[in-house]
Length: 625
Image 1 (spheres, rainbow, N blue to C red):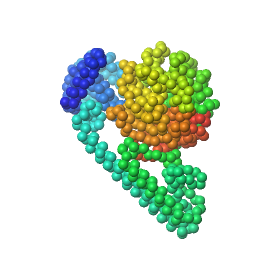
Image 2: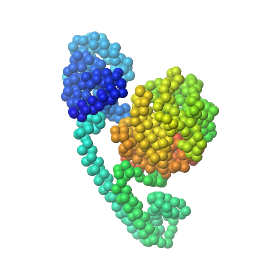
Image 3: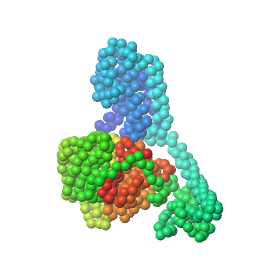
Image 4: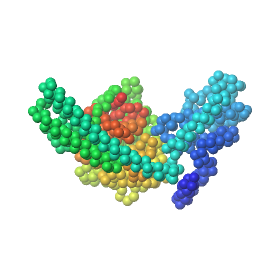
């Protein structure tokens, strides 16, 4: 409790120092409601069922659930978020039933007047309830009888108790509330995990050697008895077999050889060498231990449900993006053409269109709330707003002459605004060398006028990638100097930032629960950064095999997360792209091949479907099992 009070004092002191008087008043008002109640389940239940509901304090009842949604759940956590929504609906129904039992029909009418628009979003669940104030004996109505029973109300209280106990006793309490109780525990757990990982790596290495030895003994026995010589060749980095160089690849071959024993000894030597490397890697830190250097052949191919190929472009693909619903795809090419199309024959093609922009298209961004608007950024500083319903450009904007290249565009998921990242130009050998200073502009999507320019300091390096969090209050931006910047969109100020890579950052996006940030550097490294412990890497992969430094001479690479936040897809300088298992120990996957490098990737907003664009002028939509 002392730590909670100390944290509250720090927040209050900060708001006074910054002069945020309105925020301070709102903060004091929230504290006075005692919503948190020190996370004591019984007190919160007493507050809901003995105060707010009997006294018809609807605003405060709704604020309880607003508080729980903001502090303990995220739309990305589907199971918990859905459970909380269902619990909220049940408590609101209890509010209505309690009012009817007390003969306060006017409170029920007030309830539907105040919350009608919100409840209509759940039309199937609530439409019958709008008539309940006018039913003579609703407790006898078969449709509502259950809600007037004592068994249902007791079950509701028990469910609420179990839900609160689960989130308060679990890991979802904000970090400030667990300062003293978890410090020692975290240290012990980290030490134990590190030791276990070290032991696991050593055991895996030894097991690998034993498996190779056993396999070779079986193969030798088979070759002697049958006269066939099927060899297992294990090549180390830098060795060459049949004129092809590999790195740590297991390959079965039927080519004949006259020195079976020689190959076996070389095989064992290579296996032991690899095992020694694995044992050495076990002494690294947890983050480094997660970095597994693999080749394309190490990744199994994805299992495909279906795949559709779009051949409507005449030059290299620069970007491809699913719409908000996932029904439509916008793809662009370096010749300045944008195509809107559908991959499912059952989906209406009424939005299909071809847009000619007159310059290379460098960025695409759909409006987050519908499939109506598409923003298009070009390499000459142009920004077009395309109305997919009306099939016309509704606005044609331009960045300032000092920043003639649009590098990225992102629409807010909540507010009618978008942010453009533009840069000045200069001469250089790589795409990062050719970008100069940065400009971040916030635009209004109704007036189509700039609202503000986000502060970046004097002569800031170019911003390469943008990403909003789920409520549009935080904007993450990556830069060519290796920094990640975080902006408070309501205040229009930068709130934090840290050096993420020793090289330019090409792509940045929020993790599934928005407690982390993913970044891809031009060195081919992918990092997941903790937002609770700034600067801490919690997951990493070396993607340099696919995103090699030479490929950045032409374009920036990018990454995309699936809707569950479990699979990370990256662009590639090869004909296949890698799909990494985030926070897992499973090997990654590789996509089906294009005939040229993969330049753009995106995931469907709700399904296991991804889209890839390539230098071979094609765009492919792939559904995986």
